Structure formats: structure tokens, C-alpha cells
Image (cartoon, rainbow, N blue to C red; front, side, top):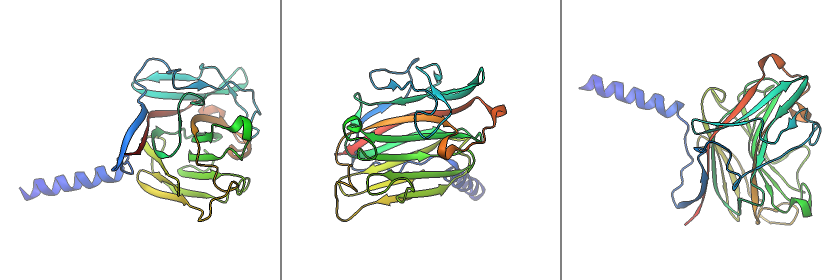
Length: 257
């Protein structure tokens, strides 16, 4: 009996250390989710962004109109490729379809490992067309660059801090390429906190809220993308390892009851 209890405790400890963890949603209620169980991208939720290379951050890829997306086994798969000497990839957003002001956002995902990739799970203010960037505000729930494997970045961008990115946190994790992890953001009128598998990465909470440091009291939309190269992804691309994929198991948005 003691032997079986010992084995059970060991297995429990192992699972605790290796399983993706939620930050916990006590006091919240689910207001929207996409579990990606359908056969095609749900265009009542999502838009495909189509853009040429160099559109932002000097990135090398062309974003295609759904050609680099697959839904399979309940996963959204965004694939970066090199085809006919050109890089292609995918970027989807929920602009004008699913926007949120405050809440707990959880995204379960598995990342590409290849050098030169720059996957991101993030949000922008819905007023970007009117206010521009960074006045619209940006919330980076997860960013990773292949040249710095295993390090997950979470950041805030606004008029009071961008360029050098002073509002940021970094966590090193194991197996982001072979296992799914939960990337979370808890955002309310006072502060914004980022987590990886329940571990706090960074909290942003300026005591005095101004237009420059807090453009975060209004609707934001979601963006998922895999960039290639660019200002942060770097000039070195390991073409032999392409295609590279980011898989998203689900996105869930909770708000306080």
C-alpha cells in the first residue's frame, strides 16, 4: 500500500511539473472561446491579414489569405514556409469581430523552434486606425524568437514606453516546442499581469494613469502570427528547418462575475 502511494505521489509530482497550468479563473466567467474544433477558420471570429514582406518590423514573410492555415485535431496551425524562394506565413486577428475590455485571456499553444521564427500571441487597441501605434496600446501575451530558444517574452507598448521596450518580463521554460503551454494575461482597470503556466512573468501597474501610459481602458482585439526574420527575429534563417508551425489548442476569455 505504501509503495503504491509512493508511486502515485511521484507521478503526481511529475505531472505537476510537466503539464501546462492555468493561472486559475476563480471569480471569473467564460465569455468567449475558440477551441478550433471546426474544419476551417471561423470567419465570424477571425480575419486573415494579407500583407507583403517588410510590412512591419522589416519582416521577410508574405502573409497569405489562409493558405498557411490548417485546422486539424482541434488545433489551429499557422505555418511559415519558404516557397519558390519566398517566405510565406499567416497572421489572423479578431478586429471588429471579437474585442474585449479587461479580462483573463488564456491561450494554449506550442511554438516553432526554428532559428529565424518570431511567433506571437498578442492584442492591439481596436482604435489603431484612428489613434495609430503606439497610442492604441499593445499587449504582448507571448513572444518568442528562435535565436533565443526557451525564453518567453511578455510586454506592454504605449506612448510612454516603446522602442527599447521598458515594460517587459522574461521567463525561461522547458519544452515550448514539443509541449503545449498556457500563456495568460489578467487585465483590469488597475493593472495587467502576464503568466506562463501560472508563473508570473510581469505586472504593469502605473500608479497614476495617463493617456501616455494607460491606453488600456478600451476594446482590444487578438492577433496570432508567425513572423520570419525582421528587426527582432534576426537576419539568420535556417531554411532547412522550414516549414515551421505554431499550434494553438484554444483561446479562452474570462471576465469577472
